[in-house]
Length: 308
Image 1 (cartoon, helix red, strand yellow):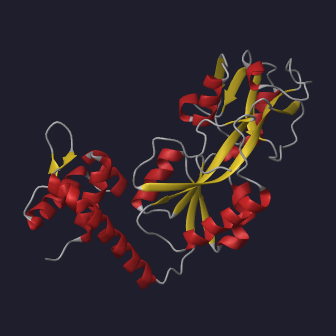
Image 2 (cartoon, helix red, strand yellow):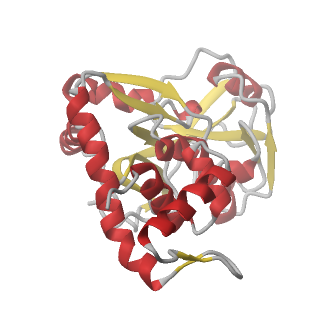
Image 3 (cartoon, rainbow, N blue to C red):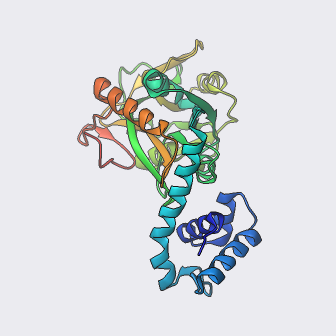
C-alpha cells in the first residue's frame, strides 16, 4: 500500500486542528480539497479516521494512525531537504516591530549561519506561515494558546521602561512602580486586544485608560507619546530611542516588567539551520544573562518554566 504524503499531511493537520476549515487554511488549500484528500486516504486504509457529527473527533483508528502519520510527514520533509541539499538560507520572520526584535537576532546572527529575515504582522499570521511551510522559524513574543504543531524556546527576558512626555506628572521620577501609572493613558500601536503584553500589563497594574494610534513606525509612535502629557507606553530598557524633543524613558521597578522573546518553529523536522540558530541564541543568553528571572523582583504575564 503506497500512501500519498499530501493526504497524510491533510490528516495530520486536521487531527491537530480538529477543524476542517482551519486545517485547510494552514495548508493553503480549500476545505473541499482537504476533505477529498482525507476521504481518499480513508478509502485507501479501509476505515474512517474522523467522527464528523457534533464536531470533529478522531476515531480509534485515527488515534492509532496519528503518530505514525506524523513520522511519515516528517520523513518526507527530511527526504526533500536531503535532496535539495538545503543550499538556501534559514527563513526567519519576526513580529513585534516597535520592540525591535532585530536587535536580539543581530547579536546572534554571526554564529547562526545564513539567514533571510522577513516581517510578520503578528503571532497568528506568523504561526500560519510556519504551518504552511512558507518560513522555517520565527522570533517574537509567544503566548498561549499555541498550535500543537508548533514548538518554541525562550531566548531572552528583556526589562521594559515607561516612555512618556517630559510634561507628564511623573516624568521627573528616577523610577516608577507600574501601578503609579494607573491614571495615565496607555498608548498602543494598535488595538489593545491584539497586543497581548500591553493588554496583560494594563490588567495586572490597573491601568484605567488606553488608546491606540496607527503603527507608522517607532519615531512616529513616540512623537505621539511625547505630544500628550497624559500618555505613556512601554519599550525595552536599552532600545536606542530616536531623538524626539520632550520624551523621557523611566525605569519600572517593584516589579520590573519583562518582555519575553522566543524562537518558534514547526514540529516534526525542518531546516537544519534551525539547530545553529537555537544554539547561537542559547550561547548568547548564557554570556549576556538574558534569562535571569526573579519572581520577587520581576513580572511576566506567563512565568517561564525554563527561565533561570
